[in-house]
Amino acid sequence: MSDTDNLRIDTQDKFIRLSKHIEDDLSRDTQIRVRSQEMNNIEDYEDERVNQSIVHTREDIVLLVSYASSIIKILKSIRTLIVTILVLFVIYLFFNLMN
Image (tube, rainbow, N blue to C red; front, side, top):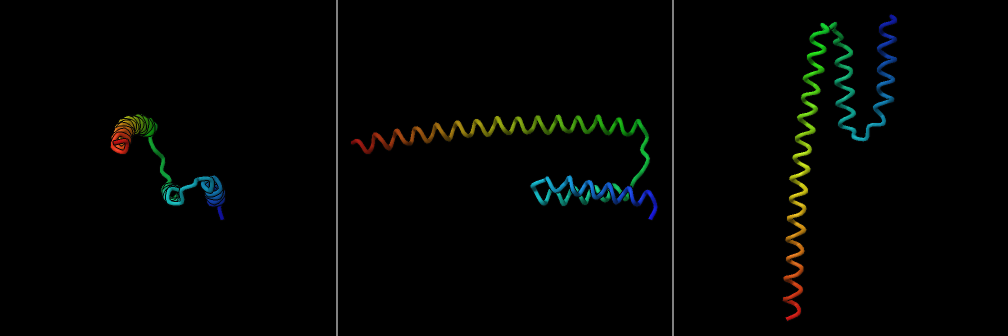
């Protein structure tokens, strides 16, 4: 075995140990599969391409966080609406049972 193979196996072992802390089995399996595919397809990328990819990744993360924030606001509105309907229903039942 060459030094590169030993390094790859050592890196994979470290990755597997780290991934054991991930609770979701499906996510862990997907992550391991992607990582092993990437390790088998090691390429040298141009610095400009890497920097551009970093920028695009940051943009995507900002977009995902924005979507998550919007979804949280919508869910809070739905919760408020449901609580309001529930309170009105309880008041309605209270007055109907009193009569």
